[in-house]
Image 1 (cartoon, rainbow, N blue to C red):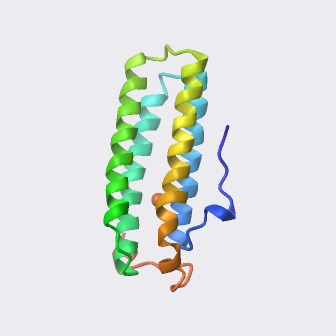
Image 2: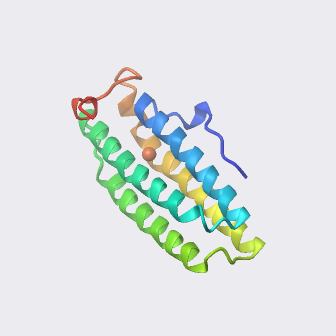
Length: 145
Ligand SMILES: [Fe+2]
């Protein structure tokens, strides 16, 4: 089922929320491709998502550091999430568009759960710290980009 960003996914920072919205759009796009077995578009969409995800993790780390949030646990989660994503990507690309409806459902759910867990279980831990700052707070590192 396609995910939609709603207020309950807000972690209290405009940059992070906006990046999560983009991630959700990308995940929804990939889910559609998985269901359509679009092995032509999938590899490029995976590359785009992975690239964006890495940039997002760097931004989160910079923001966490700027608001004095201890980020070690989130950093571990980022490494884990990235590895899981890369495994799934390799599995799907190797299947070259040949998978059952059940497998399509499984991979789609995996992606939705993965992004929802990232936001709700990990990034949400930063919310109390982020709420001490304006919603549009951006550390200098991000302003330079
Ligand atoms: Fe995030």
